[in-house]
Amino acid sequence: MSIAGTVVILNGPPHAGKTSIINKVQSVADKPYYAVGIDQLFNIVEPVESAKKHHLSKTVDRLYIRALHGVISGLARSGCDLLVDHTILDRGWLDECKTFLDDLDVIWVEVKCSEEILVKREKEFGQQPEGPAQELNSEMYTDLDYGYSLDGGSNSVEDNANKLLDYLENRPMKGQPRARWVPRLMPFPNESPGHIVILAGPGSAGKSTLCRTIQELAEEPFIQFGVDTIIEGMAKRYMDTPLDPESMKHFKHPPDGRLGLYYMPPGPNADNPTRYMRQQLGPVARKFMGGQLCAVASMSQIGINVVSDQIFVYKDIYDEAAILFKDHPVLWVSVIADISILEKHERERGDRPPGHSLAHLMQMYRDIPFDLEIDSGKLTPDNEARLILNKLKGLI
Image (cartoon, rainbow, N blue to C red):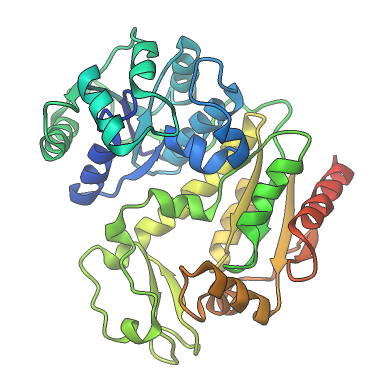
């Protein structure tokens, strides 16, 4: 059981302004909100090549919509306050979402926008991965009881964000509690839970590539959801540390900086006993970290297979994962590589400072009873994925 977060679902077509409103609320709200939504269906959880082949529609593979609803439930039940970007096209989607969130504090917000403005924005900014804005606007399911409505076409982003925050602060509760103590996992386990494959290793070890390869080669669908996902949904105000070790020495955190995910300069010093930069998690980042683990367990609980990349920088994160996954079919995989390979991948990526991966390697908690160890410097991603999938078959 845990104190659940509040779920604010902004429902509307692409280019209605939902993402802008969410970003603004995240930046000015007096409490942390995590952003999750329909765009993750195409950018994160679904295999890249599969997502490119279709747009959002009433006939889109329900597995991915179900996964999204499972993620929302898992994050909220772990205590995360959520801002959800959704485009409900079907009564079945709505019913499922409401079922998964039945005992939670949920606010449905309509984000409307004229077709003229939708078309104009689409021409200016390009079509969203979900599909043509005008087409999806006409297909949206309309029989929905909203608590609040915003005009994403006529009002400014700032006005809409302020209106939404004011409503959330002063909304009628109709006799219901704002804070709710609920089961951390949904109270209806699936008879056949989905498999969880945990890929644990430092940055630049090849985990993300391996996740995608498993999705492509597996006979059954796998959803990708892990540590990178949680970073995508956090407000930038909680991730402000420069990654250059020299810059870290003189960096002063703003008020929210130490609440989130940040790095400490190499030591030894009072904060960091090692000579490598060290990742630190404030209470906001740690709550979101636990939320993504709960989301993985929730998807498994409703019969969805998940492949999840993780960096267990502290023992307590692994301990939480082990407790959450203990009643689920889970395969623990260590993904390692020689330091020279990590440094090579780091240079090729170009978005990490020198020493970032080595710092992860030195900090990671590694006393884990892994089922399999993969050396990404010795195998191709295809061979790595086949080893994992064959190992998984042996456990079934």
